[in-house]
Each structure stands twice: as structure tokens, then as C-alpha cells.
Image 1 (spheres, rainbow, N blue to C red):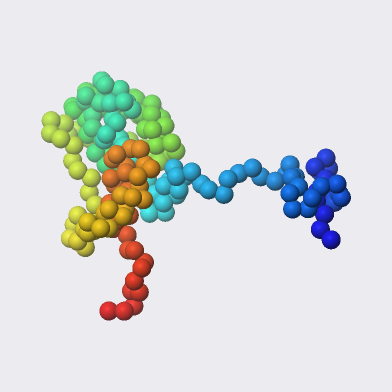
Image 2 (image 1 turned 60 degrees about the vertical axis):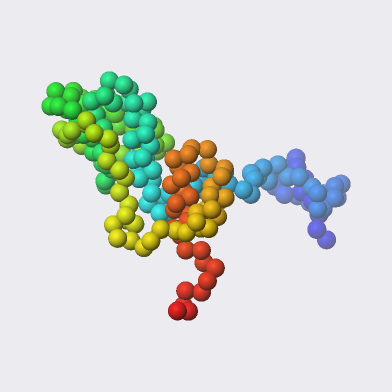
Length: 188
């Protein structure tokens, strides 16, 4: 016969003073079976290799808040490749000054990312007068056509809980582009 565990013991010794099905043992975890949405989204981004692209978009959007107004006025994040952040700098004087500030900038950028995604910063003199360059996408270079209206509506229903509108829009587009799995791909 099954018996419950004695909570006062470090080993599970059976006792007969509580009901078998409703006994509590302190060694049991109090964790929920559901993961927070942020953890799920982070895992999906890691598996799809989107962490650096999400950080790139966040850096472009929040650059003044991350590095400060003075540095943001003379720099612009260009791209992230192979864990290196490429920055466009206004002139050689700022480039020289930022060489001394690289460790501080790295710390600020990685704090914004929540993990160490960037290992180095590459500084290049560039034009900062126009709008920042758009994010490039593999689908923008001759890929398959975009999703239909019904796919976008269904994807939007799945991302309604995401607060950040930029991330919600990108996640909606990503979900809408993913195959639905409802049809058999072997049939022509």
C-alpha cells in the first residue's frame, strides 16, 4: 500500500497519519508548470539565431538612453556581426575618445541585452546625417512572398500579450511567415 511522506525527515519515510493523495513534502518544487512568456520568447530567439538582430533593433531604437545623449549624438549603431558591434562615428576625434570608452560601452550594451552578446566594438567613421539604415532580412532579398491577411491576423492574436509594439510587430511577422503545419507537405 502507498503511504505519504513524513515532512520532518530528510529522507522520505512513510507515515500513516495523512491521506496518500494530498500529502505535502517540503522537497517538492513550488514551480509552476508554465514558463513566463519572456523566457519562451528568449528561447525561441536563441534557437532561431535572432538574439543579435533583436539587440540590433533595440540599440537603434534606444541608443541615446543606453549610452547617453553626448555619445548618441556622435555615434550610431550600424550592425552586429560575429558578436561585434559596428558603430558609425562622426569624426576621428570622437573615434579616438571612444577607443578609451570601449569597456564602458561594452558594459552598457551588454546590460541592455541582459547577457554578454557583444564581445568587441568596431569603430568606423561614417555619415550620421540621414536616417539609420533599415534592418536587413533574408526574406527581403528575393525570398518567398509575405504572409496573407488571415495569417497576419492569426499571428497577431498569438502576440497580443507582448507589450513592446516593435517587438510585437516583428514577432507577429515572424509567426505569420512560419509554416502552419496544418497541411501535409508531401502532397503536391
